[in-house]
Length: 334
Ligand code: GLV
Image (cartoon, rainbow, N blue to C red; front, top):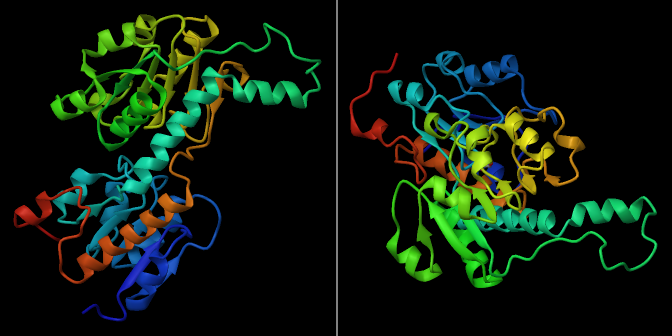
């Protein structure tokens, strides 16, 4: 049983059934504006609540966590949780949860594909070309792109999304799959005729490199100047993971100097700002961190975040816990 006066603060209106699920059992306050919440407003909400439902744009720092010693859960509305100081939350015994699910996996894998096709087939460039009135009739050399069939796709990070991309590339497009991950996955290799390589081999051999790792200290600038220099001049780089995994300034330079053929990005190093010169490049396709923006995915995320909160408020372990250590040891609360 949850006490009816249990307070949940939600940092932005979210789609789907999550809010109603919470409202049935708790007192819910949703930040009412359509902008990223300021630290001040966030702190005000955290101080007020028992449970926090936050977004990947909210920095849940030590300072924010410390304003409320009663905080029972930090439920992120995202798969990634690099916006949260998980180490500190764990020290304080606060469960942190996220929202991975099959819908978000499919949404991001599909979006990765959309970016891949858009950049290799020059779809956005073509659209702009027509709208500017430049189309004067069919021409043999007009906006030549490249095909995916038979090409080598290098997947960095073989989690759910990386595997979803591999499935589509191998079974749907007839591409060859290389992958790099800290773990080897033999069933995956068999199913998709995939080969595990070093990151260097993957970069030198792939026609398309796609990144699907979480942002960690060890993945920060995983793709920098040196790595970009290893890629083929004809290769493309796709990123739907987290911006800082790629050194964006180095990427702009590589693209300007035609060291690689193109890039398609959904995430940026200093979101929502872009590295200088990125928006001027023709061989780049950009989307505003919308890879998971399908009705299916965002609704499933909403329900999952709510279920994580309700479980904790009922004294249960939440279904999508990212810091299981909080249940493993006796932790100090203030
Ligand atoms: C989106 O970027 C997510 O982590 O869910």
